Length: 228
Image (cartoon, rainbow, N blue to C red; front, side, top):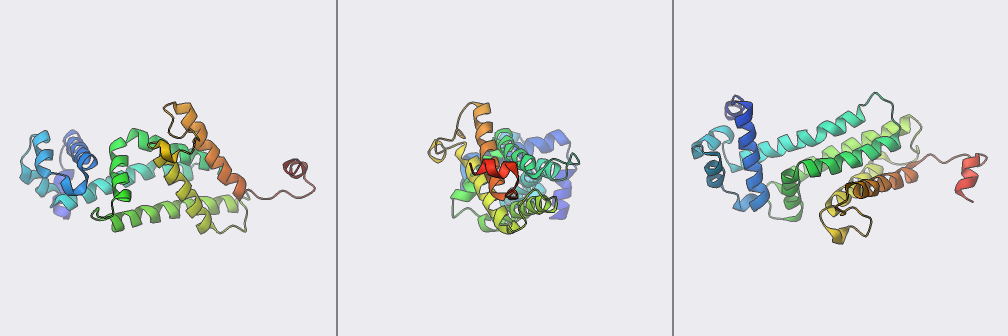
């Protein structure tokens, strides 16, 4: 497989991009089972054997697309986590929610394939690939929460793993609701108005942060105001 991948990697960037985009479009529009290597090569105007030379099989092609999509998603999230600006935990979480929404809007084909994977039990590689996505996401959010705890921005008595589960679950549902008004619950996540959607996402992030916030001492004026 390494040799086949290196053959693909040696292509000109523009040709690599066309192969990946057309392949992704095929999986997004037809799912895995009905995806056709013949349709892909027809649109690309290349020999069918070329795809097999590059990826070995349809599964190899899909795995490559999945790996590249995951890297694409992780890049902005890593930038938020590793930011040297010193943003507090609530601001980082807001940025994560907005970055997730921006990704689904900027990469509709990737998002479409992901939604097919989560909703179709017979999707090949579903268990293996979704397990990887969940492990990456939960690990990321756990690090985010632990960082907030280390800086005194998140309550120390909260289990980071449980908090990560809560964040990942809410974000996944919020992003799915963007494309399904039935899941929106009237929050504005499915709105065509971008500012409305972004306010709804920020409100959800802030709701989580309030639950994770370090309790203020009883003598603190803000504590009295919170319980007024």
